[in-house]
Image (cartoon, rainbow, N blue to C red; front, top):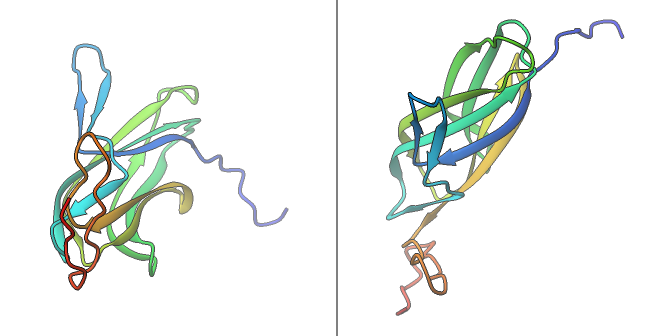
Length: 156
């Protein structure tokens, strides 16, 4: 079709959220520590100290402009973003990109997402929830979070 480009977009293999990524200099392996789908806030608004996002991509040809955005699902507002250019030694290579974002402002509890774009096209997104309350214990039944200040805490 006229107007369509023959530009190939990379394939997003995975997009994960975690507390930190450890890069082993000897083996070249990366370890994702503290994977999560929910962030617990003591109150809102809040500022998240740090989030690590790791994206694995393949089928990379040439220099590809990339953008990672943090968006609020309620209104699709972009809260933060990071841009760069990606290259790979071969289209068969899998490239792991690590983004560490600090001081992330979250005005309200709700659903958020990290979206990864290449050449302006979305490759994928990873949602997470920000909840106000206390995190459930590591074992045992989950404790429901306190989502609104007008709901009293129930004893556990």
